[in-house]
Length: 359
Image (cartoon, rainbow, N blue to C red; front, side, top):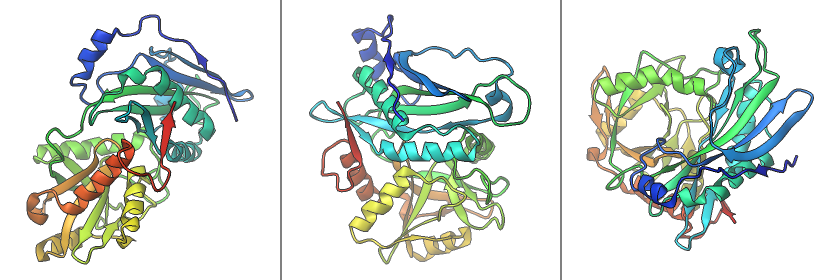
């Protein structure tokens, strides 16, 4: 399916001076660009009215389906400025596929993958001046909401798909610092047959109380156990997790109830390229503690679009705390992070053709 986007530049675009001031220290998800892409869906008509226009509020009826039954999905990806001034997108096709899968699971109208990619590229083109240099990037947030006005429990007949963009600085100032995580024993994130593998807002809402508990315990992040036996490591509040062992292998929890992270998938591919054995296997919190104590476990790290890779230095729980590799960032995590970031910014070869150049 191909839709032609109607491009309507904002009549009140941010001045060069004001934009430069905002890009000095944009933080994460606080500053937004001038435009948004938007496509609408209605039953019988399909996807239509594709356009790029000035970023603005949506008119939303109080009986809009998303407000009552949470039919909502989203994605996160970035545009990177290369040293030569060009712009890279990293694996937008993978985001488009996952967005399609999320829509199917949430009984929403699947968006054609080419429309997803075109919407992202159109927004990047019109707002490319907002892409920071250095280690900054333009964070892109495609999302879809159910917009039909009704109070019956059924899939919506109308949807709004949109893409907004936010310039972001380096996630870590001074380099990636090891994070501390809290093992949630009171809350779970997802169960078999649920929406754990879907990128929907409800998963993140369900993680917020556990994340608050982690903060209350002095930790940076929360890690969830499985919902059945409460033993197996699944993922953090918004990131996948890896373990590096003394035999050179990597282990990461298998898919099913966790998000199929694109950064996760990329790390697996890069590790295998280097000859590393990667195991997608169940791993218990008890084994994690024992392997850290014996020295069998050399490193643990989390990964996701925002931070790329975050080393884990300390694990806290009601059963006691333990450190990993002396609480410092290890060579496996940092080596993989450098490889991935160099590909994203176009500083090295791209063996898997992950990069899409935006003209």
